[in-house]
Length: 81
Image (cartoon, rainbow, N blue to C red; front, top):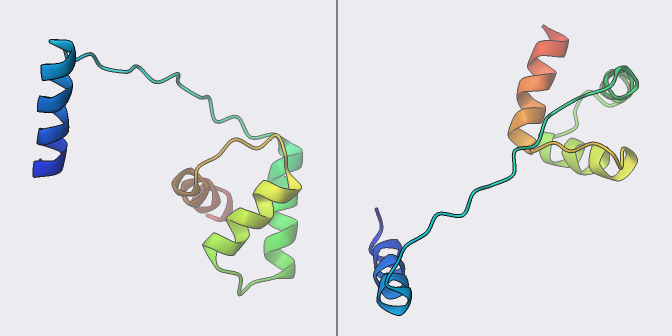
């Protein structure tokens, strides 16, 4: 643990006399067939694209796609395998 993180916890405890954990809302990663088809089509058209550029392009073109970059890498590995 870094000293900055530890100091932040100490400051928070001194201020509130309690340390509470923020629970995150889980997101389901559901990918539709149309989205998979689009991913494959764009990969066939541009085979030298970087993952960062590809992720940005996907986020612009598919508004309903809720993915993180690491999940996209796993998904592409499954699709292309």
